[in-house]
Image: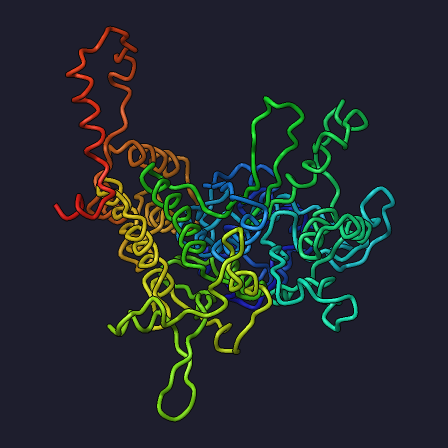
Amino acid sequence: MSDSGNVDAVQGNTLQALLEDNLTMKTTLQNASAISTLNRVVDNSQDDLENVRAAIHMDAMAFGMGCCCLQITFQAKDLDESRFIYDQLAVMAPIMMALTASTPLLKGRIADTDCRWGIISESVDCRTPAERGLGSEPQPELAAKGQRRVFKSRYDSISTYIYQGADNTDNVSENSEKRGLKNRVLNMYNDIPVPIDEDSYQLLRKSGIDPALSQHIAHLFIRDPLVVFEGAVEEVDDETLTEHFESIQSTNWQSVRWKPPPPRNDPNDPHIGWRTEFRTMEIQLTDFENAAFTSFVVLLTRVILTFDLNLYIPISRVDANMQRAHSRNAAAKGKFFFRRHMAPLEEGDDGYCVKYSSMFARAANGENVSRTSSKNEDDEVDENGVSKQRRKAPFAPGSIEENSYEEMTMTEIMTGKGDYFPGLIPLVQAYLDYINCDSITRRRIDQYLDLIQKRATGQLVTPATWIRNFVRNHEDYQNDSVVSDEIAYDLMIACKKIGEGTLHVPELLGDLIVDPITTAGAWDVKLDSKRVQNDHLLDLLRRYSSRKAFSSEADSV
């Protein structure tokens, strides 16, 4: 949120979001839900009112949990991969939230923020004063009697990475000095406090669960369940069902969620594997935009795994990025902490001493790229296809430079910076080349990537910026941050037309024209069962197979 001004926000039991700065206290006083709060904390003298920050006050949970979003769940090939992808996507969570920002209006007011996350976080923040660090009387019915210090809302960014990784301690003897590392969370990027339920942690460790995953699960259990269904408490058999675990798991809404497979108690039950859910993106106005960002994140996970990349930065920097992502027009104007080197540095000789440089520099500088020049023991993979490089990533091997991070613009993160950081979009393009993506799919993906690149560079605006500008430029807007009924109606009509493809807005989609969505003829096509002649069948199959251009020969035609 904006840091402008040196005054405190109104304190009370209502959710708060700052209004656009440069607005007056009059707007806050006109907000009915704020009046009772104001009366509790100030005596309405002029001096006190000058120290109250203009804010939007929301007095119901629905203001947060009523928001829409764009979430994606990935099924990994195994437990190990699901945990690694969880960590990598946690770094991307604030980046993608800023790129998809679409929530500048709250309770009929223009906010000083562009994203929903902070409001939802407040709407379900059930911490006691003691858990917030303010002190209060013990409450025996709560977890840890409501006295344990809890640093985040139950809807917030993650507090711990969960990929344990492994170094050379896997096969050490009992007397080795390194044996103690087996009982430590090896991930060196976990640099913020992680409160845990100690009993849960010890139970998990005794059951053979490694420290990193034990810490993650024990962290979930510092909170009480929010929802309990009649007939699903003592009646649930914890030996065969996971309902009690899910009652905790499903009410810890973090930026990324790790999802174990449900039990299969019958051979006919569906087989669901280890999954990772990416949760921060905001819903877009068109199906095209939603498909673009969904496809990009899916492809990015393949890029990370296939090219063996490492996005780790300290969680404290991820939290800082989450705050920055809320800012107005963060995608175009903000800077975010990001890892400088996604792959290990290579050793070379500059004529004076040993020099280490990014392997990407060779491609960026037009040098000869040899497949054997960068081979080392960390490239070797185990029986599951996992390299030592990935398994060592959590505990930051190598030099300080190799594990460094810096502030980057969204343009730099997406398109590259210098010769050491290639950018995420070029890496996705390289992956599509690697898999010999067919030409028809490639054309569509290129459209998606073009949209994302133009939004990152500021050539196209986010939905939040478009909505804000729509309200500001409306003939009924009084420059008071109030979204009147007339403005709200016209905005909804415009959003509907954009989503249906009947209104083209160049600042959102550029030259792209979205095909209109219509119900005309939706029910006219019948499931015909008349026999098709063989020639016709072969022609249909030929038309289908012609769209697959997987071979280099087909692509070159």
